[in-house]
Structure formats: C-alpha cells, structure tokens
Image (cartoon, rainbow, N blue to C red; front, top):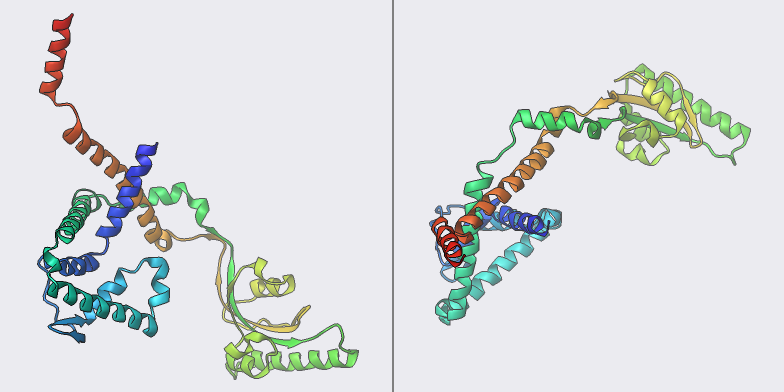
Length: 315
C-alpha cells in the first residue's frame, strides 16, 4: 500500500511539472538556455541591463501560479507584484553572472539535479500522459455508473419586488402596503415597463438595487409561499397574484426554469475527463514504473541461471 501511495505522489509531482509547458520553457531559459526556446517577440515590459522582461515572460509566470492562488494575483496589483519579483530575479541573475557563480561547483551540481527532474517529468509525459486519455465511451460509462451524483433539484431563476410589512404595523399601514403592492403588480402585468426597472423604483428589499435579481434557487432556498409561487409560475412571465411572506408582499417575475433531473453528460464531461483520465494515468504509471524497476533493478536471466547452478552444485 505504501508503495502505491509513494508512486501516486511522484506522479502528481511529475504531472504538475509537465502540464505547464510555457512555464517549463521559461524555467529552461532561466537555467542557462539549456533548451532551445521560441523567439519572444511580445511587448517588452522592463529592461534590466542587457536583459528584458516581456509580456510572455509575465504570462508564463502567471500561468505557473497554483490554481488555489490564481485569484489573488489575477488583478493589476497581483500582476505588478509578479513583475516586481521578475525584475528582482533578473537583477540577482546579473549579479550572479558577474560574480562567476555560473561555474560554482554547488550551482552546477544543483543545475544538474534540476535538469534530471525536468527530464524525468518529460519521460512521464511522453510515456504515460500523452498516451493515456479517457475516450467518450469510457466517460459515458463512468457517468452512468455514478449518475446519482449528478442529480439536481428543479430550479427557478427569478426577480422580485418586495413591499415590506412588519408585525408592528397598524391595520391601516398594512392595508396601504397591500394596496401599493397591488398597484405595482398591475403595472408589472401590463408589461409596459421593464420589470428590473420597476424593482429598482419600488422594491424595499436589498435586491432592489440590482433590479430585484435573485438568480437561480431551489425550493428549499426560499420561504414556502414564495417558492410555491415561483415554481408554479410560467417562464418569462410575472406571477399573476401577490405573494405574502413574513417579509411582506412579493411581486415575482419568473425568468427561467430548470426541471428536476440529472445534469447532462456534456455539462459534466470536463470534470469527468480530468478524474477518469488521471485515474487511468495513475494505474498506467504504476505498471510502467514497476516494469522499469524490474528492468533496471531486477535479477537478470543469466544471473538467475548462475544462482540456480550454484545451488544444485552445493547439493
């Protein structure tokens, strides 16, 4: 079991290194031009001595950021931070070259290690990653096998206008609120003014500023009276009655509907492809590396024969 876990960790590390060719090309360029890279004709962002930082350099660095941190850097401030770091790196590289550190034994040894790791990652890419990919038939089989995972409740996309009521209101105040709501409902049903504009004008709820937009929701997400009306209403139409809840009177416009059922295969295909292909690659990698270990570390046939002969002689 431990052997399998270790193999999975190695594959994960190597896959990570292979899945970003742009970043790898940049790293190779930084490592003393050990690999031929395409000429960069993109916009020059900074000039440091005889070296430059281009738009492609920055893009490669941004692309190499782990997924969980991308949102933090995906803005002008984040881009500037990355660019500043690249500038520092170029300056320090220039200092190192001027001090002759390229020929420092420790640096040369470390560079050789990095080259070995990069070559190993490309061996995995060439022999496993590029060869193993789930077919549509395999993906559909996995989809059908785990279809219950993709079950979804019915959903409604709606807007609403809220006229608030509270338990502290007098009968007269409640009557006025209802009359106001009925007037707005009549105007909404007439369809002469865009519903979103009516919501901005009349709604007393927080969504009024955004035209009463509520987005997609399931029945469980809303109070019962509101949910019942929204799911009963016709797509593209204003619900023909006022809806009362503990918050007040609602005028509801049903924008769209999704029936209860299963997410379609095409919608989940990408996530399925990632999972199934990676599972297949892990299995293939384990077989491949085990065979290589036998080839490189195992007992050769002639050695087995020699050992067998020695055993018979002793007997």
